[in-house]
Image 1 (spheres, rainbow, N blue to C red):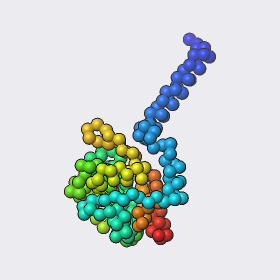
Image 2: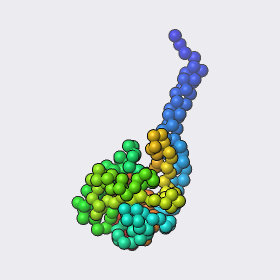
Image 3: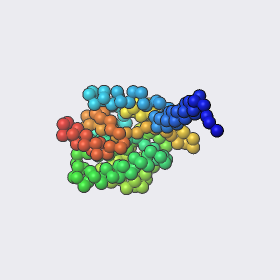
Image 4: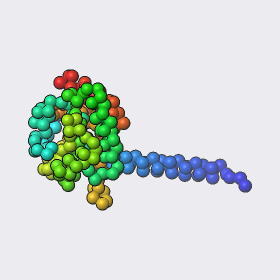
Amino acid sequence: MTTSPSSNSTWTLAALLLVSALGIAALYEATLGFRIVSTESGRRLQISAHPLLLPPTALATPRVMALQENLRHDGRVAIVTFIYTRCNAICSVLGSQYQQMQSEIIARGMQHQIRLLSISFDERDTPAVLQDYAKRQHAQPAVWQFASVPDAQQRSRLLAAFGIVVLPAPLGEFQHNAAFHIVDRAGRLVRIIDLDDQDGALRYAVVTRDGS
């Protein structure tokens, strides 16, 4: 049995359409429905050139303290990520990465220069819940702290400043994007680093600390 050139072209076109559809579906899922792909690269370049002063935010750590006051009082550059404790997907990856980074910070004697800060965007994550979660993550409080933002409006403004998109998902969960965010002691977002570049995040944190 032979096939005509037109049949071959039809099969080729169908295969290309299928591959394209699968690729688009994967990109859609990874970027939360294309919500973060179009402007993220330009936004990161803008942040690098012009650090963004973060909005006034009251953090519960568990003592309630303004974000800027928290940063100045601590005196270290913070590598910030956003999480929620019920997450079984990307937050688990972040937890493993932060455990590795915590060990690296201590091994390199950088615990007086850099700290890790995980901020929950889930209003159900009270300070007590976060404290229990920190224990499960083997977080050492001197290096890795957890905080929540009790005020909903402040939480929304802070997420927007960091470029974090949070979408409700079934069973009380969320879909959200994630990255390493370098924040200096003055409360400015100075750099956004991909999650696969832990060394880069630590390196930029050191550079920020030395230059601030």
